[in-house]
Amino acid sequence: MVKSLLLVGVGGQGTILVSRILSQGFVNAGYDVKMSEIHGMSQRGGSVTTQIRFGEKVYSPSIDRGEADLIVAFEKLEAARYIELLKKDGRLIVNNEEKYPLPVLSGFAKYPEGVMEELKDNIDNITIIDARKIAEELGEPRAQNIVILGALVKALELEDIEWKDLIKENLPERVHEVNIKAFERGLSL
Image (cartoon, rainbow, N blue to C red; front, side, top):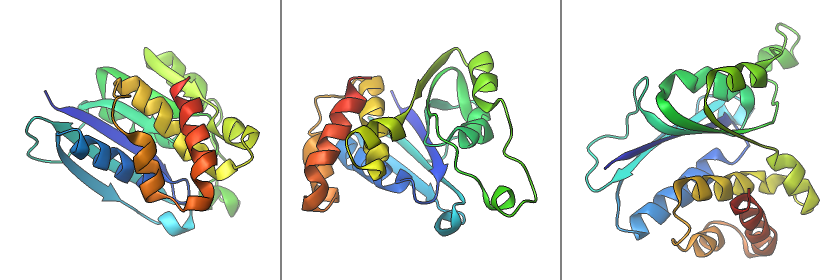
């Protein structure tokens, strides 16, 4: 069986790093993996998406409307933007974070109100996390992406993969300890 994951966020949130760690983990566990990244204007806070499909045999990384088993949103407006790709019985993990897009920052638009309420009203299987708060408690706000990785690994029930080793392989040594703690906190959610 093939699983389809969509990771969405804003440039600078570490979405691509988490996608790469996930893909390496899936390959190490013996899965066939296909991944596609779209960076958009990621350097300026634009939308970033990664489609990952893994299973016994995967032919394409593309996830069409209504095909994602799981969407992981690093920012709540990005969850709303891509929710149509989620399966009817799919799961949404959403970080309760607001990152203002350029039109909002420049005063041409307002950040929409009620995004989280709308998601809760329309998605049966939703997990809301406050990864920034957890990462700040650990003393490293930038580790919120690894908190999200931990929550995702728990949701996939794939804790037996050597995720901590992969985190260490993909991050500088000086941040290993805090990111391992962030991952463990995410697993406990």
